[in-house]
Length: 136
Image 1 (cartoon, rainbow, N blue to C red):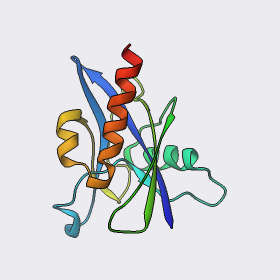
Image 2: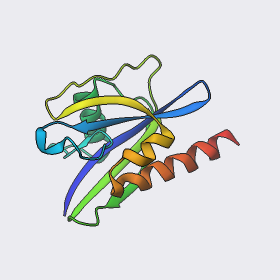
Image 3: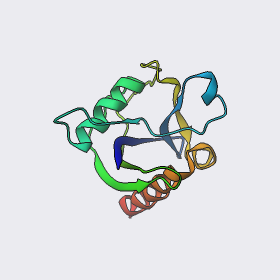
Image 4: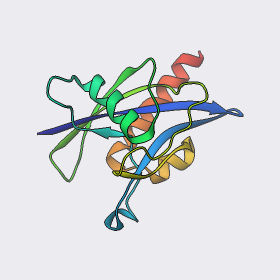
């Protein structure tokens, strides 16, 4: 099974939670859903290392403290995606740092639920649960 890893970084702006997502580049992806920044681990990398590297390579944002959100398995392909979550660094300004993405930005959590890849929606739900637990 093919495996990849990425991050779901978040920040709070005026009381609203925003998450860092990317949109794949290319004409064939114009109507594609958004995704967490992610990719395949290089040889010798663990999943968290791969998630950090891919996030930096795709968005220019260097992740700080991360915790695992587990993984999801895509319903239509044999792919497992591991996700790590954490607060975005103060003042993070994402940009398209790779040819692989044509957009990299913080998206309001409610909007993110509508535009994220259906198989990654679970990561948004898990993140919400973790944020609620932290606020108690």
